Length: 265
Image 1 (spheres, rainbow, N blue to C red):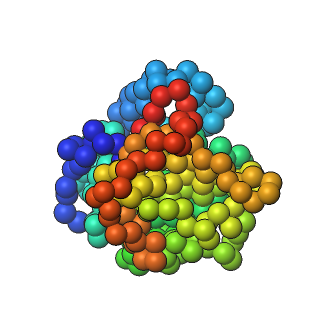
Image 2: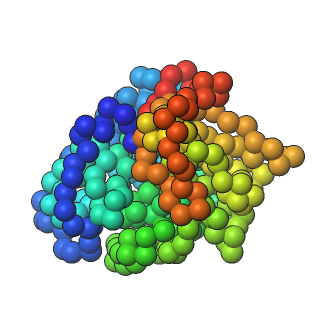
Image 3: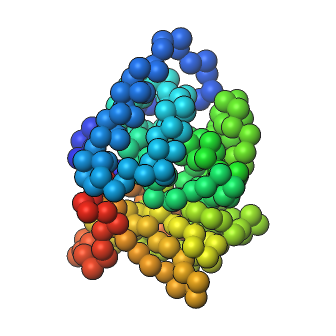
């Protein structure tokens, strides 16, 4: 979650559902949002304008975000801010979903793990780009809602499980990419173990919610990892076994190099 967007977090009661969507055509708003995301990313570093960005934006352009938010928020679904979806969770801002998708470097034949299903929006964006998405959500009610919503909307290559994402999903491993939409103090070793060689894990890491950065972790041939940062961010915390005790004295690790010329978060 982008720091500047925290104040714009829209608090709305209820949960995203599969209720009929208003007939209002939100296509123009979606297209305008996608254009703004592309412009902002390329302005930060022109090198981001590659095939991964093109594919990610095409998917974001095709997925109806209004179907993944609470009914009262559908008319503002294309503001580039996070929105509450219930149970203390949020749907990430569209530029963050786009950025994490770009950073994962996914290909059409890939299998991907999505930790923190939420309403299913990130899984839906990924589903158009890869062969299969395994998505794990620790809140059973959200997992059930997301599974029904994704099926209702026709995303057939997504499998949703109610489980603690700290352990990933070993039954479907290894994964070519893993995206985690919740922050932790350190990278869960189980997730590194479930990556293919050359696979990428995109996850917010830091000593506290206020001191996170969005990292891209790549698994090398000898099983070690390399890291780079997409910039500072703020996500809801990972719960379950990976839950951290926020450390107010901790600092962002400035030794981690940026992935691009400037932060993209």
